[in-house]
Amino acid sequence: MIRVYEWLESRFEPKFRTKQFNQAFYQEQAPSFDAITTWPKALREAAIKELVFDELKLVTAQESQASRTSKFVFMRANGQLIETVLMRHKGARNTVCVSCMRGCPVKCTFCATGALGFGGHLSADEIVEQVVYCNRLLAKENETVSNVVFMGMGEPMLNLNNVEAAIDMLTNPEQVGLGGRKITLSTSGYVAQLRLLMDKGFRGRLAISLHAPNQQLREELMPVAKVFSLDELMQAMDDFVALTNKRITYEYVMINAVNDRSTHAHQLGKLLENRLSHVNLIPYNKVEGKPFERSSQKSLHRFAAILARYGVAHSIRGTMGDDIAAACGQLAAKVAAQ
Ligand code: SAH
Ligand code: SF4
Image (cartoon, rainbow, N blue to C red; front, side, top):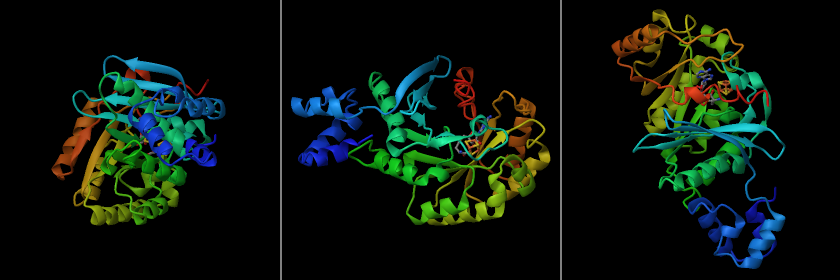
């Protein structure tokens, strides 16, 4: 679609029209061009005729009463479906989990999104619209989006240009206006792209999908490990910490009898004991057609107790929104057939 900025320029509109659009669209949650009342009527009418207001169309919204989580399925202009999750942490954060691709080409063995295959990159506008949509919804509750995590469909490091442009829009005070530290990129470990991002000055938060404490098991679970080794990944993380002094989140999905044994916990403890880190233990969400099962509560707690002995900070992720398949890794499982 033609972006509103280029369109305004092509009409030789004064610069402040852009500011007025940003104010209405990103900050006042205007639901249509017609609601941008700072624009003259003729301009609004022309925009309605010539532009698309929302690139993503809402297909379904599911609310989980139990956990105050909402899952949205959006349709792209080409008909593909993508998903977004809004997690309301009472009295605290409102976090939006955005997708940056339709499907994912990485194909981690346990992941539903990977099983969909790769359907295409989302544009920066499509990524940011997911946040704008949630802001419109939250405005009715006198709330706003406070955090954005790139943990929906897709691998951010493989759609870097659009992800970087989206981060610029999310942090631009004239647009969404979030602080840089409120944005978390989650990656399965594309070291070259991570280094590029670091060199360009990325200072948001990083979450690394680790899922295995040694090279061999990581290769079995995540094909990317064959391209970028665990050693290279940890070296890059050490460099990021040296640069930013920021704690890195390591995501570790707990799969029964695959990566949840005591030996794995000891290996992970040794790997991270001298590193600025926080391990997020994620109980595996069952994906239909995959042979993996969630670890038992007993294994989870034994694993956590071993990490504690190494002084490694950790938490066990609550499976927010499990009941509506909004939990991480289950995105796409339900829309795959649509
Ligand atoms: N592609 C990026 C962003 C997706 S984030 C990445 O892999 O980091 C989604 C998180 O959920 C990742 O840590 C991913 O490994 C994890 N995940 C994938 N499938 C899962 C499942 N079935 N249960 C729990 N977590 C899963
Ligand atoms: Fe892609 Fe992340 Fe799923 Fe791996 S875990 S297939 S990188 S979305």
